Length: 239
Image 1: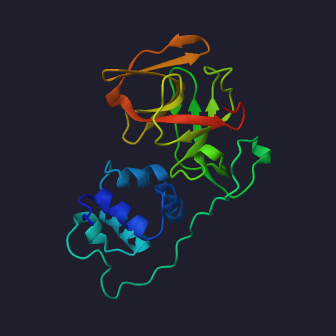
Image 2 (image 1 turned 180 degrees about the horizontal axis):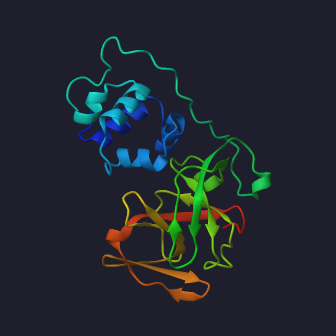
């Protein structure tokens, strides 16, 4: 097996070795914002000594190895034992239907984040889960899937203000698919979110459109985009 070369790769390796399949599950167990943990795993933010010590203790690895990659990944002799971190609940195998929220069944293990604006300007999206809901079939065994509440009516009647939208983190959108576009803000770690319909790419420009009023948005430069995720449904106005 190739040795992880970067801090983020080493952190992801340690997290998986500790039994956490997803970054969201590890962040929840550690009690840290998911956006922060993901930034460390993705290499967008470096590890401070204090943070590396915390991760090292939680995942039972040598914190210095996390930072530098030198030496053994095993914790040094005499390191104090740490209590087991809580594991995320397992999804029920019968979660196979998209149904209204009050009729969902099984464990609620899909994180729901802060709201995303449906209008042209977007709003800051928060990555601290505000609640957990049951999974629909398209996200049944998908790592890092999530939901969020929509603010605004620019995608009406497709989606309405207050709808809980369901996002697949890795499925590439096709033309006319509904997407959540996450744009980088001016401040480090700040992200804005837009719910729109995917038109396509024109070179390094992302083309999106909305429904209410029906219009094409101004092209968005690729460098502005922190993420583009396909919306696979909602718990109102199901796909």
